Length: 518
Image 1 (cartoon, rainbow, N blue to C red):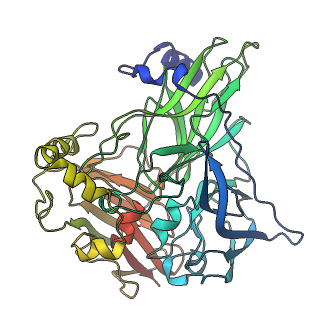
Image 2: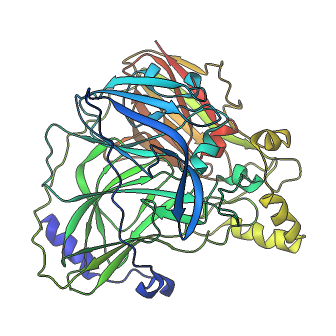
Image 3: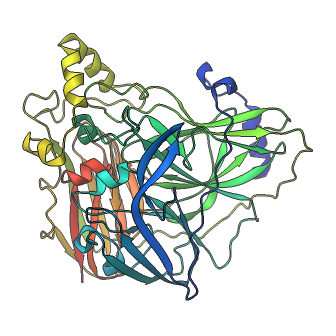
């Protein structure tokens, strides 16, 4: 059976079980999906980025965001082999950097916290996009101590690297950058709270390309390719397509070996996905791409949106004749397993909670459920023990220094991040195998700079190792509570490289480490 026939059968399966009525069309605003602006080089082929406060209107309110070139989600479009120069100017009152998340650049150009750009200063990033680095990546600030605030103000952009040649037909392509914001009553970006630092910030205003619940209108049966980026600080996207399945074509490191038919996809902060989505086959119908609730181990009173499905994008079929679509190839890329590792390492992600917190000193005593779990139980328990006071305390503004002083910290191998500390040393070109363990009650997305890795095997708490059947390339992967993952990787460039939790607040509170490659 051809892949196209499998797709049709999947769509004919119709309704997803349990899709709430609140996601029907009459609840969705009719806004059109905004196209993200492309960055254009100057006359000498150089790009320019200025990060500065910018007044914008969102959801009927005026607010100030911190944006690159005054734009929401500008796109740097490149091709493998391009020599790139980007001049970045810092228009903020605090230091910043630009980290090219997913691009395989030299360490001195990576934009980590060791190389901050002072307020009012500029810095030139220069690199060549290597062969094999095609895919959807993104850029964002990475100055230690300021990353959370800058991400909360919307600082992010996308990087689309095209291959020299593609095995895919020339599908129309859309880029989707998902962000979230929290605004106060005056329309300003609200300060961080204790709950934000504990859990990772989730804003109530969920945006796709800067808009809420946008739509795309196409002829029936249209198929388009979508590059989806989770640029949120802490929110997980549990992606579903109403009434059918979709094809997963690629992940962080580019195309998969073969398309995978999916009915759901978990996209954690920092991850990207290359999807092929189909419109309804009848004119006048629509299909909703949405994020299903996912309990990642929330601590304390949950935000109102936490257990509700969140609309992302409406695919609306018009009354025109049905589209003719190309056949999807059976094979996309050749991906071989990396050879056996010469070096093995162990990394343990853990947390320290304030004295008296329900999870303080409680490692190993909390079960976790994917869609329901202890977060709900804690909320009920908290409500029964002066929950209003707990909620008020969690909602109070708090700086990173304040919460660290209260005893909250996130660690790798028992240490909080130190700019001067090198946790590991390795060699260029040497294959390594990392066993990464999540010794905590909540999910953590784990990101590695400077390379892509393969997920080799996974182990649930108390279980056996389960090997993965097919290799694929990632730079960010999720770890469930008390789960272990085996990652195989190789650094092809020398320098100091970071690994960290990509919940931005956890990174800021210490869950980050440096490996030196020589």
